[in-house]
Amino acid sequence: MSLTVSTHAWGPRARALRPGVWGVASSGSSRTLRRASGEPVLSTRDVFVLGWVCEQYGARADQLEVLLDCGPRTVQRLLARLRDAGLIGTRRLLVGESMWAIPTSRGLRVSGQGFGIWHPRLGGLAHVAAVTDVRLHIHARSPDSEWVPERVLAREREPGEHLPDGVVITHEGQRVAIEAELTVKSQQRVRLILDELSVRFDTVLYFCAPGPFRQLSKLAESGQWPKLGVRALPHPQTAPVP
Image (cartoon, rainbow, N blue to C red; front, side, top):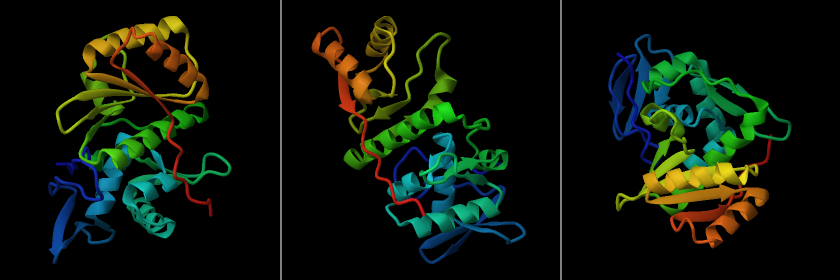
């Protein structure tokens, strides 16, 4: 039996924990997760972060500071616990950036979400980070919304469907397709994506780097896709690299 963690809701707590690989021990208002041997001790927040990082493929330490609204030392201790338990690996992938937390195969099993291992490619890191920044940005402004990550959407996709970077479900039940766009695509490709997403979702919201921002803004101004919204990519709230 695996540990099931519900991580679609926001906040530093997992809402659904099921004893399995880990047993649950309670002490007052705090809850910790212990292995049968009693060696590593993980808080409920630790397990929440593990599931959240699994959903995002991986995440930088500074992004986890924003997620948990805490300082770098707290995140470093948290990552050390997960690393010591064999649930994540930490790697500094780009000069000048915080280290990345990447789930191990064991961590993915413990999360109970059924995702495969992610092997980071330098060419794709910026997009993975941008999607995470967008998720954090949306939560800061709509904390009651639910984020459905790309990895979950991929399970439900029909053959040939375009896969958005995420879907936000508002508390009113509106479904918003989210795209984080860093590069300019061909007009034909963008138009086909907009046609499809406009049929499947209540709103299509692009967060763009400067080049695609100009491209998507012109398409929005045409009025052909009334469900389309265009925003600049949020500025990541980064911490100084130690």
